[in-house]
Length: 159
Image (cartoon, rainbow, N blue to C red):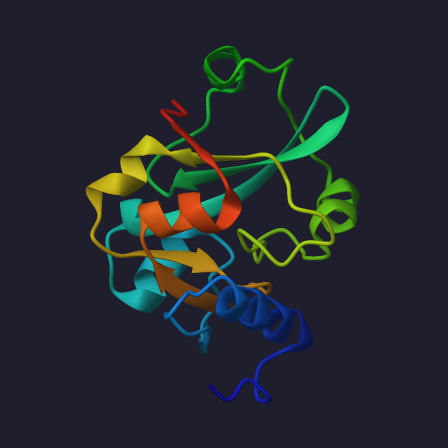
């Protein structure tokens, strides 16, 4: 796997993916994948097959919610199901501090410290899903089961 052509952040994600035994390779696309709609259009897939990486703050720590692109997170319901305190969307600065990546390109892994993570149960409806790989133009193919494994995530409904 040659990763030298990828942006630095995506190279870090590619190395983390390889270390985790993930076979899907990071791809850099010509079009932006900053939003689920942009990613789905660029990849030619259903918007629900896009795994959005959203950072929240709960109990004074950053947490990661990997949600289907067709869903909006209900913070109150998810916090209750997850057994955590209130969930508040992280600011762009908090996202970068927690992940080393920018909003619109946050990968499920490759962060300075692994984050407590939830994978949206709806992602299991798709045989292949796509997640960001460290920048707003890089992605990698995976599955919900693989995301749960590589992030040590809990699977929960997020709506």
